[in-house]
Every structure is written in structure tokens, then in C-alpha cells.
Amino acid sequence: MADHNVDLFVVGAGSGGVRAARIAAGYGARVMIAEEYRVGGTCVIRGCVPKKLLVYASRYADDFEDAAGYGWSGLAPVFDWKKLIANKDREIARLELAYTTNLERAKVAVVKTRAELVDAHTLRLLATGETVRARHILIATGAAPHMGADIAGLEHVISSNEAFHLQELPKRILIQGGGYIAVEFAGIFRGLGSEVTLVYRGENILRGFDDDVREHLRAEMERRGIKVITKQTVDAVEKTDHCYCVELSDRQSFMVDRVMFATGRKPNVAGFGLEQAGVKLAQNGGIAVDKFSQSSVAHIHAVGDVTNRINLTPVAIREGHAFADTVFGNKPTAVDHTDVPTAVFSEPEVGAIGLTEAQARERLPQVDIYKTSFRPMKMTLAGRDTRAFFKLVVDAATDRVVGCHIVGPDAGEIIQLVGIAVKMKATKADFDATMAVHPTAAEELVTLREKAMSYRREAAE
Ligand SMILES: Cc1cc2nc3c(=O)[nH]c(=O)nc-3n(C[C@H](O)[C@H](O)[C@H](O)COP(=O)(O)OP(=O)(O)OC[C@H]3O[C@@H](n4cnc5c(N)ncnc54)[C@H](O)[C@@H]3O)c2cc1C
Image (cartoon, rainbow, N blue to C red; front, side, top):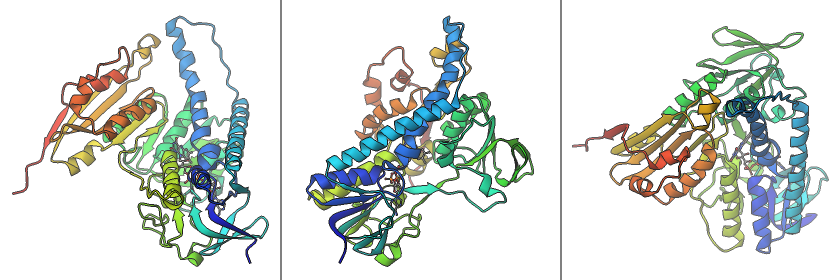
């Protein structure tokens, strides 16, 4: 006999699991949720939220400098890393409590333990050894940093998890990786005053983003003093008396105070009994699911990063909600994974939605490109040498805007709203018919008149 019986057992109290648990409980299900680390999951505890707080902190440096051009003087700011981390930790603890309280208010039983599958209907709570029998199981275990090949000295390397808890701000840091987490941390550390080297094995940073965005961001990062090294990898890390010596594949070496890898994340699928339950994995290493997030076992579902579809918080939340509606609300709901807007909180920021120029040219016979690069107005008096970039990708056959790519201040905020227009299938004519808001940077989106490029593919004979 199991110690408990529930309608739904959720493994992992992160973005997807918490939402699913609350909505399912709202439909009257008896729900238990297990969390082995901290309630809130990656986003709240060591992802989006603490990262954005550090991004805010790092941007004050430019603001203090730029203020001089606007007549301010006498500013002699001093930065205190320990204070920032302590304040950030206090905010994260507040959020964790709020998440727990909301779950309990929804009558979800929260158990602070690792849970493992014993069979397709039974879970063991490792903290107490108790077992739970569940009618439905939701796996929402997220993902974890993947540190890559086992190079010499890997034990000295930190991931984003540890970067949030460093005792000191490193004077010099080398970050390996070219994805959004790597470029975001490069911007954070640079803004706070560290000497930053970014090493990436590919041709250019931000693989998967529009090529113009990748080039523009790289140039801007270099302008801010970040050393970007591509087509190289870290081969070895050696600890010396005071610092670390990092050797790259081309035998260049660097002496730094910290080495961080942001070389990807791996779904948390290992070692918790998926095999016993008969749950199958997909080619991408995540749990294989259908459009309703149902796994190969009918009463076991999976949402969020553990399925390795689109690894973003709002997507995990939407998948968790849709799961609860489908299974407990009698409202079968599939999540639409197309045209998901996204931001990179680098310095400057990136916002993107829809097709890149390369993707559009591959998929559509007629593509028009509109783009512009300009110095944001605020930077004129500030005297800062930086440029913003806006690009629209248009399906010339239908006039639909199928992609929008922005680099510049507030790109994340702007792309959220452009996202509505793109999702509604707005045309370039709709953009043009929208009155500009002046003076803003975003007005460029409705005043782009000149085609930068026009591609036409001949129909196959
Ligand atoms: C540094 C960083 C920055 C990010 N920034 C952004 C951003 O700006 N915007 C954005 O949209 N996304 C961002 N993300 C991604 C985002 O955090 C994830 O997509 C999101 O958290 C996924 O939610 P989830 O529910 O799938 O998993 P998670 O939030 O990872 O939750 C999974 C939970 O399951 C727990 N768990 C695992 N195994 C077990 C077990 N056997 N028993 C009990 N508990 C278990 C884990 O401890 C964890 O708390 C960022 C991620 C990182 C690492």
C-alpha cells in the first residue's frame, strides 16, 4: 500500500510544474508536487530573475557615464558586489516563499524532496522513503548546465548556477559559450567592471539568430571592450597560486580569476526511473511527447525544458497550463510553438520573433528585407558610440511580416508588442499604416520604406 494517493503528482516545482499543479488543483484534483532544490525552479532561483537583476545592476555603469553629457557631474559611484548579491538573494527568497504560499493556497501538497519513479504509477519521496500512488504524473524536472567534454581542470570551471553566488566580482573572467546565457553574463561582468573574454567554438555568437543580429551584437560587445574569440575551444584549465591559466585550442593562453562555461543545458532525465515507467526519450535527449505533452505512457506527461522543445519560461508555463486544461479541465489544449518572441538581455539587448532572413529565403519563394541601423537619440548627448539595429523580414507574396529582429535598448520590451502583430499575421502595409510614436527608437519599425534586399526564387520548371 502506498503512503499517499493523489490524482496528480508533479515532479519539479519550476515554471511548468508550478503552473500545472495550481491549475489542476483548481479543477478539483488532489495534487502533490515535489521539489528537490528550491520552489520556483531555474527561472526564479538561478535563471531569468536573478540574471535580469544582475543585468540591471550592470547597466548603471553606462548610465553614470552618459549622465555627464546631460550636465550631471560629481558622480563618483562605487560598486559593491556583495551587497548586490545579498539584495538579489533576499528578493529570490521572497519570490520562493510567494510561490510556495500560492501553491499551498491552491491546496497543492508541497514536498521538499527528490522524487523518483518506482513504476508507472508509483513515486518514492527520497527525503522520507514514503511512496505515493498517482493516477497521473507530470514530469517537469527542467534542465541542468552541460559542461561539455571532460577537459583537464574542468573541476575549476563554474556554470551559471555558481555565477550567481560568487564571493567576489572577478577582475578577469573567461566565459566559454556563444548562446544567450554566455553573452548575457559577458555583458553583466563587463558592465560591472570585469575584463571579459568570450570564447566560442562556432563562426559567430548566438547561433540560430538572424545573421545581421549576430554580427551587430558581436561588434557592439567588442566596442564595449569584451574580447570575443570564435572558432576556438577551451582545452585545459590549470589552477595557479592566485588565478587560473586557460589554454585554448590554438594554444593561446589567458590568466583569469574565473572560468565559466555556458555551453548548453541538458534535460534532467537521468537517474529517476524513466526506464522503469517505460517513458521514452526523443532524439533531442528530452522526453518524447505529443502536442498535448503526453509521453509514451498515456498517464505520464512532461512539460518544459525536460522535453527540450523551446526552453523558455513562458513556454514551460503555457505547456503546464495546457496539460492541466487537457487532463483535468476537459479542454484538450495543444500549445502553439510557432512565432515565439524572445529576448537576449545582452548589452545591448536583442529581441527576435519569427523567421530569420536565411530561414525565410529557404522556406519562401519571395522575400523582402527592410533594415536600418542608427545611433539612438539618447546616445547623442551622451557621446556614446553605439548603434541600434532593426530588421523586418517580409513574405513578398502575401506582404506578411514573418520576422522581426532588433538590437538596441529595450529590444525585449519592443519585441513583446511586435509579437502580437506578427502572431496576428500583420502585413508590412499594416506596419506602414500605423502612426509612428515620435521620438522613439521603435518608430523605425513603422517608417521602414526602402527595401534593403529583395529575393525572388524562380518556380521549378
Ligand atoms: C541563467 C539562465 C537564464 C535564463 N534566462 C531566461 C530568460 O531570460 N527568459 C526565459 O524565458 N527563460 C530563461 N531561462 C530558461 C528558463 O529558466 C527555463 O526555460 C525554465 O525555468 C524551464 O522551466 P521548467 O519548469 O521546465 O524547469 P525548471 O524551472 O528548471 O524546474 C525544474 C525543477 O525540477 C526540480 N527537479 C529536478 N529533478 C527533480 C526530482 N527528481 N525530484 C524533485 N525535483 C526535481 C529542479 O530542482 C527544478 O527546480 C534561463 C535559464 C538559465 C539557466
